[in-house]
Amino acid sequence: MTQFKKSIITLSLVLISANTLAAGFQLNTQSAAGLGRAFAGDAVIADNASAMARNAATMTLFKSTELSLGAIVIDTDVSLKNNQYTYFNGGGYSTIALDNVEDISGINVAPNIFIVHPVSEQLTVGVGMYSNFATTTEYDQSFAADLFGGTTKVRSVNLQLSGAYRLSEQWSIGGGFDVIYGQGELYREYKAAGLNEDAPLLDVEADGITFGWHVGAMWELNPNHRFGLSYRYSPMLEADGDFTFQGAKVNNDTLNLPLPSMAEFSGFHQLTATTAVHYSAQFIEWSKFDSLDTDTVGIFKQYDWQNVWHFAVGATHQLNQKWTIRTGYMYDLGAVDQIKSITIPDSDRQWFSAGFTYQIDTNNSVDFGFTYLLGKDTRVTEQQFVGPMLVAKIDATTRANATLFGLEFNHKF
Image (cartoon, rainbow, N blue to C red; front, side):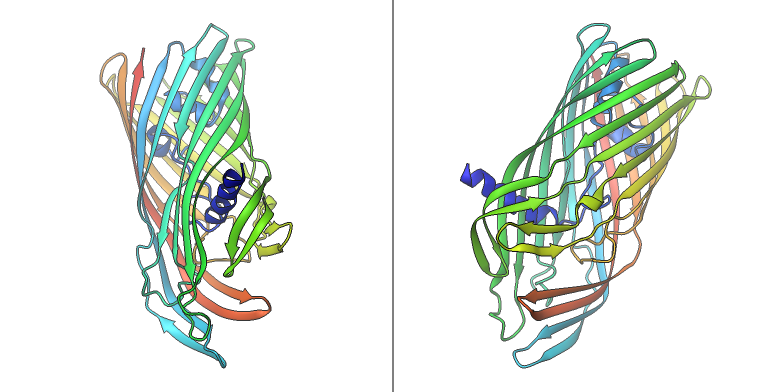
């Protein structure tokens, strides 16, 4: 149990330092079809089994057992420019200009699999496995401000167990539990002369498990118009163990890590026999993430993040019996407020998405989705203290763009 709790603590340190594709360290990679419409309407659209990831209540729309299996490839481009690094040189402070840094995130793959099974006309159950976090930020060893950059790698797998029940022709409800396994690596070191050069500030390799739950509802006005509402609860993560911070090791402490809860509303409207429009609004309670603290050390990292929304609109058009095309747009607000970091180049983002479904035969289909994610230039000033002493400061402009490709196979039994 002690080793398990230690893993949770070190994993938490990795997560809050990660660069991901949505506000804070949230990641949207549940399905290729959803990717192709910028996840607009995904809490109510049920075109394949991955629908359960956004709203379990949508499982009552399935008439037979269905399987969805796929992956999303994430090519993230994080860059730093206009960099100025100030550090303590033993007797005072020196300031140097750093070269621009490009492509420090690389390519990640987020697989997913979902199975939905109707038990009766009223009851449906489902199980899904997909990635919550899949990101890499790795600065070159020659980067002088490695104290702020270094290496951050995060992977996670979410096992979702859900059930849904049809209350009437118009109303369905659903809910279930999430078992989340995560692993990560984080490394930071000092490179300032006179300050124990090349000694690790943080050196973490970790994995761990935590738990959450979700509920949802769906209202079908008629076969062509329906609405969905879902809520996913994330608890305060309290864990006991040992970790290294600022070169010092703290034993048997308790880390308190607030995680955001999320709510999503979606609508779907079949306007004609071949064309539908859909939309979503998701609220993420990032204001819970105000600081990171332990019972012994107290607050050692202030964040003061803000609550955020993302808004998405999309359309789907069936060309013929074989081909369906879709498109979407999302505006995603950044969670980071006044306190910024070069390892969390968070900003408002725009998603430009398109995709298609090819119907192989009655029981088999393939989805493809593409998104170009465009971030904003963000000016960052980040400082590092050891006790009351300012060790170093970096001023830089960050930008995070990304290209995502998704492919998914669907089968009806």
